[in-house]
Structures are given as C-alpha cells and as structure tokens.
Image (cartoon, rainbow, N blue to C red):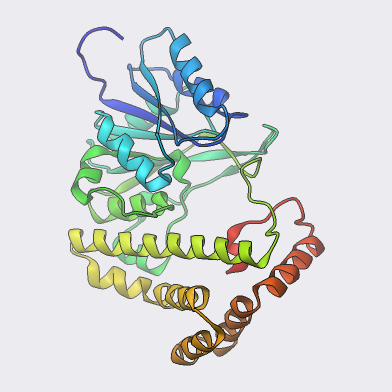
Length: 336
C-alpha cells in the first residue's frame, strides 16, 4: 500500500515453532477482504523455520495491505509478545491470529463491521470458530458465550467461555490498562475482563476462524519427576500471573474488591501449589500443608504426596494417561 494513510485496523499473527502450519495461517491473513490492513507476521524466536516462512510470505505479497514480517531476538512468551506488537502497530482495532489457525477471508471485515455497528464502543469482539484437527480436517462449531450479556457480576460468578484466537480488541483499552505483566499466558481471559469492565464486549455468532487443536506443539508425557515438577511450576506461575493481572486491571477500573473476592479461592490453591513445588524439603512442605487448613484436606495431601515423590507421581500419571488412551500427548493441567 502506497502513501501515508494509516489503516484503522491491524492484524497481528503470533507464531512460535509452527513452521508446518504458519504458511497457511499467514496467507489466510493476507487474503482478507475489505479495507487495507496493517498486517504484522511475528515470530517469537522460533528454533525452526517459522520466521523464514513468514518472511517469504511477506516478501512475495502483492496487494493492498501493509505487510511486514518480524522476529523477536529472544523468546518473549505470549504476554510480552503481545506487548511488543501492540506497541509497534498503529491500528485502532487489533485483530489476533495464531500461527496454526486459518482466518476466513471475510473475518476482519466482519469483526470491523460489528465494531462499527456498536458505535465503536465495544472494546472486544469475539466470534465463533470451527475446530480443526492437526491434519487440517474440520470438526464441530465452537460457540463462544454472548459477551454482550456479560457484566462484572456475572464474570465473578462464572468466567465466560471465549476463544482468544477469535478476538479483536481496541488499542484504547490496552493503553488504558497498560502492558501485560511478566509470565502472562492466558491473555484471552484478561482481555475479556478488561472489556467487560470498560466499554463492553460482543460476540459475532458466525464462525470466522478454523481453530486448530493438538498437533506438533502439544506437550509430550513427562519423562521424569523433574520434568513433572518443572511443568507444574511453569503452569503455577502462569495462573498466578493471570490472577495478578486481573487484580491490577480491576484496580484501574474500580472493581478490585469484587474481582479479588471472586479470585480468592483460586489464589489460595495456587499459593499452596507454589509452596508444594518450591519447598526446599519434605519438612517444609509438610509445614505448608498443615498451615493451609482452609483448603480441603484430601486435596492438600494429594499435592503433598505428588511433590514429595515426583518420580513416583510421574509414573502413576503416565500409567493413568495410557489407560485413558492419552499416550499421544499430555497437557500441563494433568499434574494440577
């Protein structure tokens, strides 16, 4: 696109070690119809050929959109990757795309139309999507909750279901609340609450994304107790970061007391898990178990046993996964 006119909408593709799928994902971004877009194809320091593919796609593009590919010099993680892209783009509305999903050609135009129909008051727009297997075959429709019906009170009772890979959000919302905290992994839930606390959110009841699940990026089964503990620690840090982000955002918007009360049960469990994972020895772990008397005794004892004997726990979980037919992969919440 020639000239100095800045597109009002930015489309950001976040990818990491997705060389097998990222070409199709990037090309689906470039195929968007409607007004010219600012499109950034961004690789988070992949160890495979993801960035080479993105650069080739960007360099070969001939069309109305402003397209560039970039690579983070070091792996930032999801939250910090978003922070960088939000800082380096200029659109008033920012649409998210993942390196293993497919955006339908009318996706961005449909989200923009919904935003404009709201008088540009909505801070977040989500859509339904179609599940996609690792081999690209399509499955069932995934229906997001109707975000227009959500309030802070309803969010505190039950978090709305929404797929972050379908999101578009406003720059003004992100600037109001500021960058994501370190270690944030679940940005979709954070953005949902930010929008609900401010100008509101809405859901387009139309599938606009083919949303891939599983695949080569899915974690394998833990090979040892050390690996089990490392994964549990990583997951614990992510959940604690999400809780911290919600708390900070609620403070900005004036809902800190309500949100903190809703998060208190989860925070207590995550703090207990952190004490189990990080305790220097069994004695310290047992003392932490005794001190957490407000939590269910059976649950406390199971976590005490898991992190006191992680090698044995990893073998048990491996056997359980195989009995359930899950030998092809393992998700981190399994150890929680």
